[in-house]
Amino acid sequence: MPSHGVEEPLVVLAWDAADPDLVDRWVAEGALPNLAALRARGAWLRMHSPASLSSGATWPSLYTGCNPGKHGMYFGHWQLHSGSYRVVRKWADCVQRPPFWVAPSQRGRRILVADVPFTALHSGFRGVQLVSWGAEAVGGPLGSQPAELAQRVVARFGRHPLSDWYGRTPQRTEEWKWLLSAIRRGVRTRTALFRHLLEEPVDLFMGAFAESHWVAHYFWHLMDREHPEHDPALLRELGGDPVRSIYRELDTALGELLAMLPPCTFLLVSNTGMGSAMGGSELLPDVLERLGMGPHRGPMHAALDRLLPGRRFSPATVMKRSPLPRAWIQRIKKLFPRRFWAQATRRLATLGSEWPNTRAFAVPNDLPGAIRVNLRGREPRGRVEPADFDAVCDELARELRALVHDETGRPVVSEVLRTDRWCHGPHLSNLPDLTVRWTGDFPVRAVRSPRVGTLSNHAIPYRSGEHRDPGFLLATGARIRADVGGVCDVTDVAPTLLHLLGEPVDDDLDGRILQELWEGPTRERAAARRSAS
Image 1 (cartoon, rainbow, N blue to C red):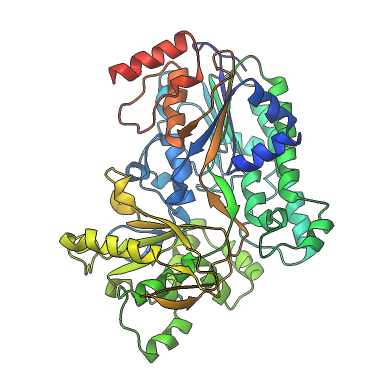
Image 2: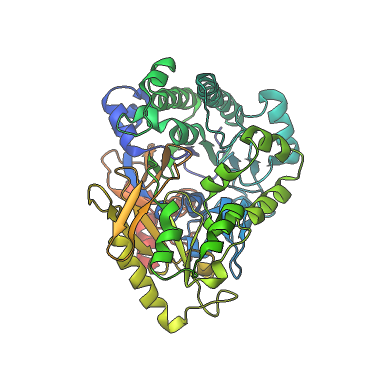
């Protein structure tokens, strides 16, 4: 494991989308003893991320050290292609900034990157990398550098139990049991894989566990007794809280990996937290129409809505409208190249879109609602003059904040964010103009406001857990202080790791070196660099 050229090796593990509130709770209950021991002797920070824009922006921001306006990604699954009204699938090779590990590898650092979510092989990388073996956020096909590594991994460990599975919400008890078992087997197989990879001498190892992500998306309603889909009978059939059981499995894996490591600086990170998926974004097309942002609609439009999915776009509703069972769709999908299928299905999903005839339109996203102003000079058939852009954004934000739950009168929107107020860079035009943060405290089934009137939402989120801010960062090691708390940002990870490697930190990175984590010469060097920049 040890290599030369750094004070001690760096090991970074990620629990993808692990929630800090759950960690706090289960550490206090004694359910995560290995993580608790690390926290007792290390630094623990809550780590903010661009999850308020989209979960798809979190990993690119973490591994590039840049905000989404520089790397250009928000919701790669269904992202608006800038300069058009088309939705496309964007893969990790569309990220417009290189991962932080590329430059130090070119200067001789020995770096091994294992299944970090939404990553691609980079032509300039001189280290060892495995991509898309078992990530929840797949960035492309399975691959590696060197190329034979992926073949050796599959021959020895097989594919991840969920490598050919995505998005098929179980319907029967047996399916729920299979999915939970597959997630648990995924943790154990990944642990064995990482133990094998960690036998190599490196300056930096970075690997991620996707299982915390999967279990929260699909089993949140069984953990959360207040969730409207909570099912006590299924909970009993599964033997108790599935989310807690997988976190305990991850803690066991953590203990196994820590036991084999030499003295090192160790980080455990989560890119974003999780919470209940209560819906809301499905209403945005109707809200925008009521606010005069959409095209005029007559009786013929209602008929077209039923025929053309793009008339009322939502990934969940498009799935529900499909005439084929999802299992059939998965079989058909395997007959086509991955990228062809991705782009063809997204063209079909937006067939008949009336976005060119609107002043503002809702674009696909995960939990936050996302709105794009149809801006003249940016969109092919823009209808809003640049001089009116601020006024349109202000009007939309004001009216969205006025929405309340139809029965209780409680607000359903906690915040409306202008993307250009916190993102900047050459790819800002790739992003939505506004994002809508729903309160998430209750199901958004019907809303009202003086201008919108009353609207009902009949779409049910197809998975019960969804991304929330923040995630977390835990750091331990001889150089790390044990009394550090507070907050940081996902963009701080890249510059901090570069500094710990003794590498230069590009001033164009948006994150900062977390100099509060350590003591002694390392802290002094970080302070000197901060004062000089």
